[in-house]
Image (cartoon, rainbow, N blue to C red):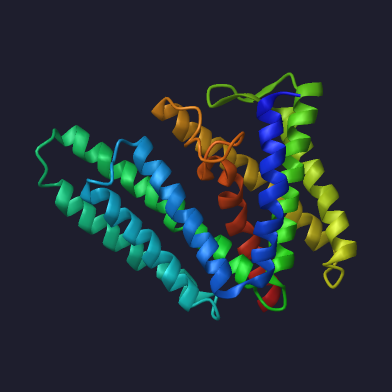
Length: 279
């Protein structure tokens, strides 16, 4: 067994129970965990982009992350229109402030525009997607936040393992050869199949109040969006010429690497559960 695999297993044994325990506690504790992950993820993104803590862009971007998550936490009781409206002022203010300051920069227009575009990409990726995780963990009545996070983490983790196993066994056709050469169409299908298996398990264990087809649709949709999220993060890393977003987590890379699937799956699950709760 390789050292990398041993490290991955050890980290999983220690941190998965902690993350799930905090998810079931909810409230401020869960908010603090999500905020911490979001700030670390934003730091990884900025450092990879060459933006250091001595740069004003570093702290302005982190402030936008804090503001976005705090506002979403405050409006969580109304996860519909109020939460949706939080997205626009934060993104618009960040766009205007960073654009105005960079517009007075001394670098070439090409460099300034590229920097601005990258900052906007980063703020959308972290500050506007992590709040979707926050809403799920805080709970969308009648759905318990801890159960929802257990379902989401389980289908993503098992789906990822199934995708690797089936992709390595049957995979021939590349899914995205320039972005992630190791991913195959068979692996993608295997990931969805693994997620559906978790969906069946969770239906009989925690979600039997829902028709099973809803649980399976959530599992399949989250798997599809999660695997696409993995590709999006890989696209960013390859554009930057890096393998991992950081070396923070032994055997896993960084926070962006570990939760890339979660960030794309969470908005889908959030929207689906909100629709079920209000239909």
